[in-house]
Image (cartoon, rainbow, N blue to C red; front, top):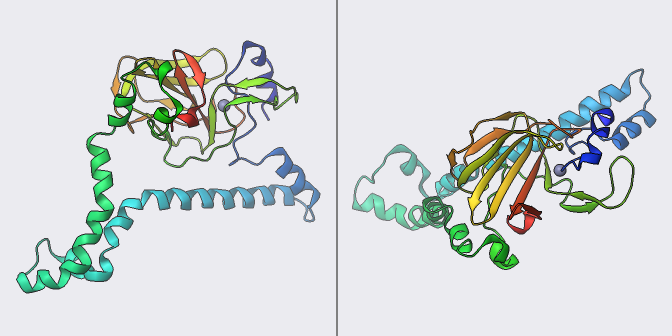
Length: 271
Ligand SMILES: [Zn+2]
C-alpha cells in the first residue's frame, strides 16, 4: 500500500500513520481472501464483493441517518396521514377533532428538541467556554462539539498506540480517526473562525483548523478538498471540506483533532 509514502514522515511526528480505513480491505482480509481462493481470480472478486457489501452497509446507515427527519414527519401517518399530506388546515371542527388525538401530539414530541438545538446550536459550548478551555472539566466538555461527519465510524482512537508498521510501542496518535469514504462532507464541530487551511507539514495532508475561542480549536485532516478560507466565520455543522487520504494516510478516513491551548486532547471527550 503506501508504506513508502509513510516512511519518510514518521520521524517528523505525523499525526496519523494508521492503517487503511476500515472501509478499505485490510491486509488480513486480503490474505484471507487469498487463502480461500478457488477460482482463477477469486481474490479480486472477493474483494470487490466484500467492498460492495461494506459500501452498501455504510450507504444504508447514512441513508437511515439522513432520513431521521423524514421519520419524525411520517410517524403521525398512522393516525391521520392522509389529512396531513393532503391539506394544510383541517376542513372544520369535526375533522380537526377526529385527527387531533392521533396526529397533533406526535410530531411535536419528535420535532421540539431539534428546533430548540437549531436555534442555539453553540449555546452549550459558549456556556462551557466562559472559562478557559484548559479549565473545562471533562463533565462540562462532554457533548459540546458536534460530529464532524454525518456518520461516525471510529477506527483508530486518540492516544498511545502500536506503530502500525513497526509494531513499536508508544507512538502518539493525536486525534480520533473515523473511517469514511473519500469525498464525504466534513462539518465544523462548532462555530468559529477558520485559523488554518492548507498542507500540513507533518503528515496531516490537506488540513483545516477552526478556532472556537478561549483556547479551544479543532482540526480536520487528510482532506481531498477544502471549502473554506482563513479568517472565515463558520457555523456549527457547516460543511468545510471533503474527506480524503492526503498526507500520511493509507486510506480514506478523517483524522479529527481537538486542541486545548494548542495541545491535542481526546476528541471523544468533547463529542
Ligand atoms: Zn489519525
